Length: 262
Image 1 (cartoon, one colour):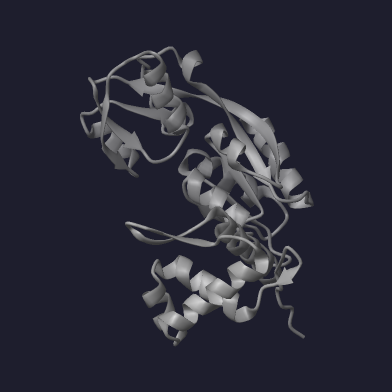
Image 2 (cartoon, one colour):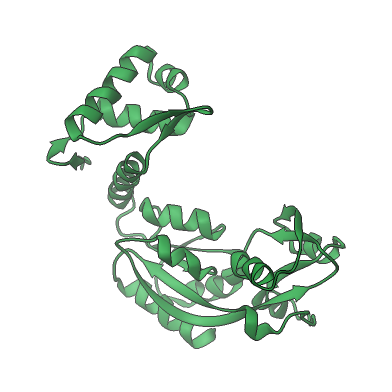
């Protein structure tokens, strides 16, 4: 027995070939490369996409100086397909995602629960994308501003933390994780001049790089590092949120544990 995903848009069923063409274009970035990956010619791929646009009444691709780009409607179709497909493939196994900011905490929580659970560690942007595509069931968001971009999900605030600001001058190194947008928006609101020289994934490089930076207090506390913030922590305080596509016993247990520990 095999389950198969079928997508309808405006009452029109998208054929397998049309969907494959759309997904190949997203993966490869050009019609020529997408066509080669499917073993068809570029004109044939163009015809599949043109017929899809005509039947659904949606504009799915557009040309730009950088080449062929996908519209929001096209990305929404692909995300919806991936969400359904991955739910079919991973039924029965709960998968959560977080960033390094809450990784240590999430590992402790998941290890204490009576289920076999997976944990994915990445940045907020990738975790949001995976949630929308159905690759994960729950994410822990460091940056609450991502909540404004999410639809068809539920979320709960599970705690708060502050950013620590180390001011070594106007040149900054940006840490990839945490609520960095909130930190730099604070500088903007105060009219403080700065430049972001580079981005790093390494906390050690951030601390030793000689540039100014922001980092979530949770990470420093986990390493027993006490660093005086150049900015009042209250000005950089933000919520941490658990976001999920649907309620589940596992998700509810994770949320309860996060609230008790944050």
